[in-house]
Length: 359
Image (cartoon, rainbow, N blue to C red; front, side, top):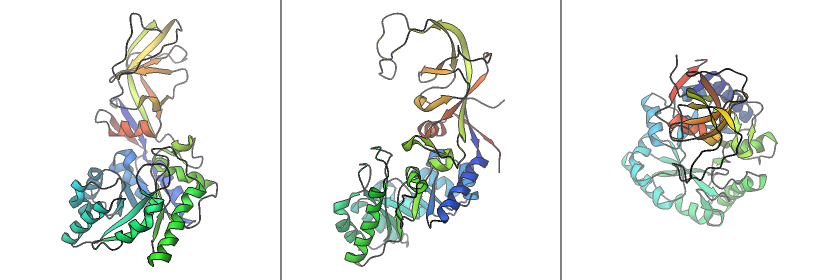
């Protein structure tokens, strides 16, 4: 019997997603950076993406990148999170390209690159409205004019991110800003930027509706590859495999109980004030998984009639009154995970990994 809680990872589906997305983007002259951070740098997932033909990899965590290097991956690797000054030495050693928005960081990277007798490549991020990382549009030309003069680094492109913080949706207009800036750099500074990285999985919506501005030649895709979904637009991408990573947990208690707690109530262990609807006596299952393991709000039961009521750090409480399946102590329930839930479950040391359809 496999351990629980566990994530169930369909490697064949992930490889096929990589193959389909690569073919789609190749036809439009777009390179994909395969973002593996959602799988917490899982080497088998990385291998599936590479087997699907996507050779440039991206991760936000330097520890994952080092793990890939030590496992023998010699692919081009992009550091997606802005570099920390405290990790500059390792970035130059292990990373080919980093995303940047601060001159002080660029100068630090450059000094270390010279020490290691390398030229480090960088992409300058532009904030087009989501208010996460990036140089403001009006400041971009002055910024890049200084950046391209720094010895030890080479500015190879510009990029943007939307959807991840402010929920700003990618549009033709806010993506085209990158192309306008690229032309401005060429005309004013006589400098050619090779890469225009137009965004992440959310930008595939523009790709699918033929609204992606011509000239965008890179997308950083992780969720679409691994899960076949686009959470920013709340959609499953219909030409990709979805539900490639699910979570299974074991039932440790089955009892009929009231639907509303008795006694004076305050806040729960996480500072929330829970609310309950009185449905009378209900049959409830407690499962051995909790908030320490997974984002509960991102879970959907796959067995019809199961309803998630809530969770503590170690226990998931479900109403199973309406399911037609006879459940017993020790039975397992499986859950679909959205991107946030997958990310947390893959990161948790308490959640086991089960691979199937091995390549």
